[in-house]
Image (cartoon, rainbow, N blue to C red; front, side):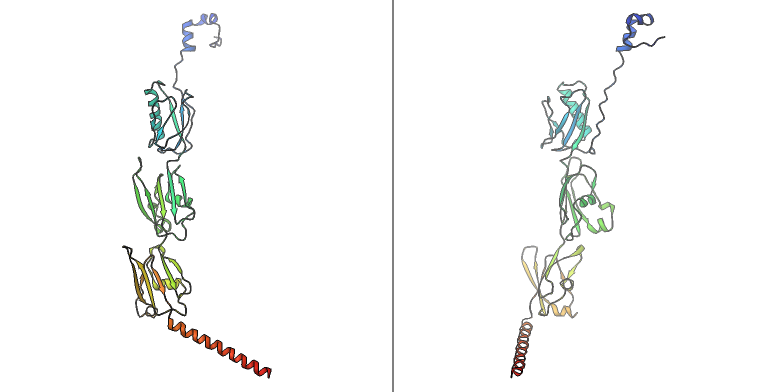
Length: 325
């Protein structure tokens, strides 16, 4: 049998097969469902929200195929649709169903084939602030954990305290989160349970460590951090301040602000602590340790200095006079 195509002359084909059968072969092939071009999402599928940018593709409807930004109210607006579509909190696949249902309800397309991919997330911010090297806010466009978020902020600064605070308001697919993460457990001990996943909407705050302020007669006055929540004390602070100056008195004072806002002055027998005759005194964050002068000692040293200077000057004058004469 010669090869026949659908363009063959009907008079020739009629010799072999009937015209109705040929018409059925050429024009009545079963219609397969349209397969749209594969448009894989360039971002992981996560619930969409306000200000996210999505690609909407409606098969065989170019007037409805476009990039759409979800409104600040969480609604999506498409041309030719009278009503808006609630998009906030929907997965892309659920949003596809919602768009298709809206097209059917308004009798625009009988059997729409809709594809939705996410082009840009703007509803899933993660902010990292506090005692980090580079405070940053970024979108959780992919799976992110706490260590990765801290890395994006350049890591912890030297002033970082012993805990990290992670908070998140309740979202449609995520519960509220309020958690304190110990820095030692997360970083030093590498406890994977503390490296919690972040899905967007979290605020990561790293408070600075508490400080004790040492002023007065020490060699290096300053504000000294209390590391890793360890207890501080007068002897530890004096070590950080490189010791007492020559004019330090025998008594010191701690100035402390109470929870009710009042200030308290605590006298300390400094020389007795230094001589190990009295126990060391603990210090709290934001305490001020003031070490005043030993007034008598400074005055005595000042007088002695004047005598030495006067005696040196007098000796120089006598020697000089004897030399001249």
